[in-house]
Length: 192
Image (cartoon, rainbow, N blue to C red):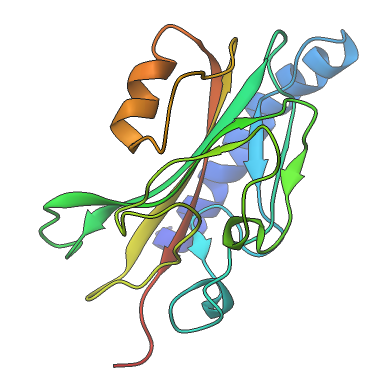
């Protein structure tokens, strides 16, 4: 009997879930830390980002939520980038869409549009590839691009950074990352 690729993929997913479920439930039952996770009510991991959050919509940042921060986290860093620029068939560079540092660990998410207004007190905006702070939404020139919403939990607050670039933030984080999680969304322009 020959199974279609779709049925084989579904069976593989169910099998993997069945294998992992007891360990997840066991960890939860013992009070062990659950997995650090970032999500969005606007799109699923590896799902399409709604046009509202892109250059073809209102270009506002999507709502984000996170849970299960590692113990000892003193701040969070969010970096949103597109490694598929300019063409996913032949990427040449990573386009930076948003850099936000020193998010308080008590924070459980960012509201829709948070990246389109000044950062809250204590937070620090880095520079995007547009050479400005704040969020800039997907606007791929060709093909379907992937957008990585990377959240880092740090054991420190990043001081002495003034309008940092992504590379500056990544250098400052070295040796201070307690955990990281990624949400990936995709987008392909519908218009011209």
